[in-house]
Amino acid sequence: MASATHYGGRLDLDNLNSRGCYSAHGAYAQSKVALVMFGQRLQRRAAARGLHVTANAVDPGMVDTALYDFLSGPAKLAKRPFSGLLFRTPAEGASTAIYAAVSPELEGVGGRYLYNGEDRPAAACTYDQDLQGALWSSSCALAGLQDA
Image (tube, rainbow, N blue to C red; front, side):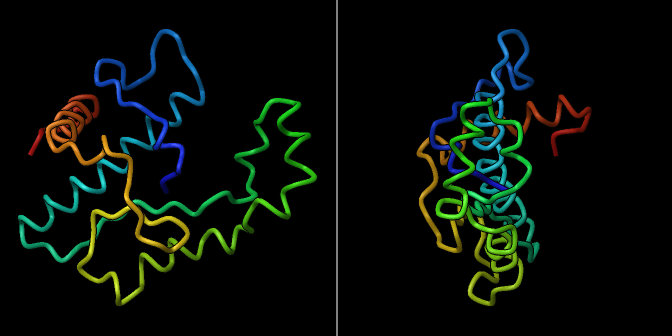
């Protein structure tokens, strides 16, 4: 699951685990940048191997879930009166993931960023194939996997 937060995120290959000066929002944004990049990289790798798999980054929009329970006090209070207007229900949020999984229109179409059921351009940095490759290699190393 992606997030529009990736637009403001940046990838720090030297600090993928956000060690040192930790920011919950910064770590979240970095993880979403990485997720979008992984979807694109995975799609190319699968296609190069002739695999009939699609990988897409799916952003359900702002969904009223427990994720927002961890907002600071003032932000949590501000959310309450506007949640019905600004937030989608969990069922509405799930619709984009379901669309990505079963839509005949997306069969064989991957490496996309889908926001609220629409194909949208992702952040410019996510299309950098060299950065995608470096992220892939670093992630394999962190996970103790061979970079195949």
